[in-house]
Image (cartoon, rainbow, N blue to C red):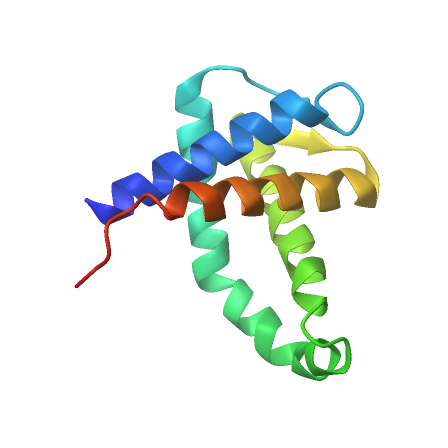
Length: 122
């Protein structure tokens, strides 16, 4: 159940990122909710498979920047999820680094805020 709620939270985050930044930074390939749910699944898989590798490889940069390097990793994950989603016809096209950075920031903030309402695992 928690997994499904996390997918819904990520889907809402992607929807808000496309809605807020659309037209300037992010161009949606599809506007229905099913596409955003599939994009949330792709994002979850990218974060589960590729993010740990990037975190280990970029550990010196993260330490050197006092954790701000994770923003760069989030940006790469957002861009990669959009790219993979585009290959399946459910993603979005990001216009440059700033679009990916702002989109990742919106998704992170929405995910954090909505996760506060989830019950604890205990």
